[in-house]
Length: 389
Ligand SMILES: COc1cccc(CC(=N)NC(=O)c2cccnc2OC2CCNCC2)c1
Image (cartoon, rainbow, N blue to C red; front, side, top):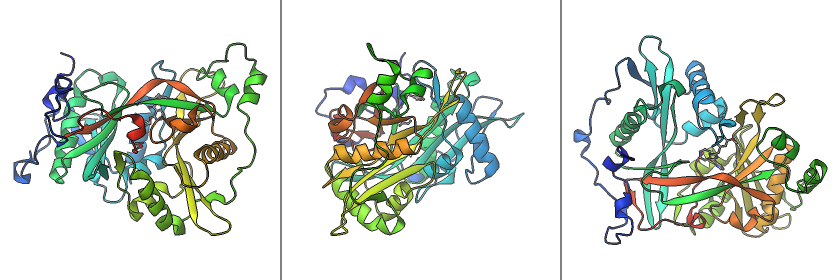
């Protein structure tokens, strides 16, 4: 049976596809809090639950090491995501976070951390419906414990702890097809350091292309071209919030960000998130915004390099500067900061710049999911205004 676990969950089921009689929105009503299971789910013998206090240097290091050695790899197992500790602290402590949603599994005897899953609260709008959801991420089971069916019990446990906070919906992404994607996105890569990317096998030399021709093809100017392009600062939070809220209102699914959210998620943080805006030199009005987050990957089995420095397109808003020019400035800044590659999904209006800015399609897809919330039919990536970490 393919989706033994997911067929028991309140998610869109493949068998319901095309059944337009099913209403859009919550699939199951909330359970009275007194009826939510009070005790943790039972783990296989020898394992115990642990709550990971990401503020603790020691626990943060344990989580970092587990993910560094056991988290998501590309389809050819040449790269593995290598989230940094400061990135994890940022990703897991947004306004209103619950430490109880940072869940680990330890071996009782050795106390070794062997699995992890997290949730953070997030206000997400679906059409005109603003729903408080849990954004689920970092599901990781040690390589040596795969197919012990740990993932389903970890998903049930994080769901139980989310329910205890009276939250009944969730959002998550995966590289695999599960019941049932609300949207399936293509990822794209823009080479910034083509020589290294070819050396490590991330990219291949194009047909009838030499290395020097390839380096020239991806060359970028030293400085950005948009007048008034600068880093975002704390005092810009109100204006950036207004700009983002207006821009994101056009998408079917998008975060419902307030100033606290914008301050947390979009203020620049070294080695974690970069954000820039365009302040008109004449009027001092903030007209555009672009941002990317830093997610390196470990390079598995290359003599010359061990890490790939990758930027991931985050939220971008263009109201005056053409999006093409704004994103080219983002590429210029990323190259200047020694990123090897700039990644983007074909969400929002990204399709309008990908090919022209010399992005190439990646070899995989990223599927978006909602838990306990039905969307009548799958969304086009351009209808998605949500980027998960
Ligand atoms: C280059 O190193 C990699 C290491 C592991 C996996 C992949 C391929 C991959 N699965 N990429 C993505 O999922 C991806 C590609 C472009 C933009 N965002 C992405 O994923 C984000 C969002 C979901 N959580 C992981 C990071 C690449």
